[in-house]
Image (tube, rainbow, N blue to C red; front, side):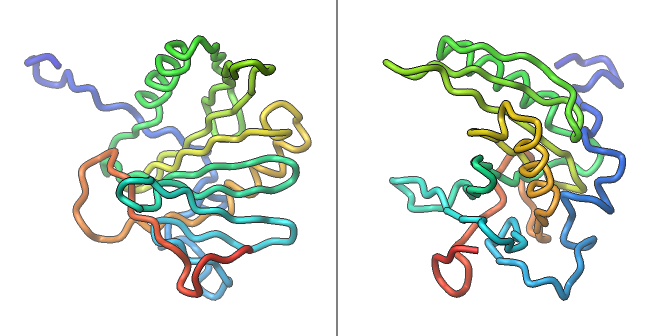
Length: 196
């Protein structure tokens, strides 16, 4: 980081122009009467044929991601705290490219409905490589990352269904001060583990 005034590493926010109305939404923008499944940092709108899984870190037992199985695809989502004025997605994309290259995989940048995204080809020992799409949206004081695997990573029709699912997510940032890049806490729904 340079000492010269004005030269900071702040990146512009990356989000679709209609994010505040079409999603993913901030809690303040969401319809309060819709029957969301409350998972803490995110709320998921139930829909037919949607299976919901919580991914738990083994040592700490904390929920680190939400997995959604839908339309022959899997969408993994994680909400992170972010600065009010700048975005995280440009920097995080660079880190994903580096991580996948270290695993011997390949990434290609693409422009999707949410803006810049990555299509990754990830090697799997003794099997065909796995394809995944990394998508991200910078919202007000939060960043929502999605990883699409299965049919939605390569098939445009399945991809559109998963994109619609990603747009329906509501991020609950809360008022607790958090450093940028910290995972916004996730938890089991109040009724216990449930399938939407």
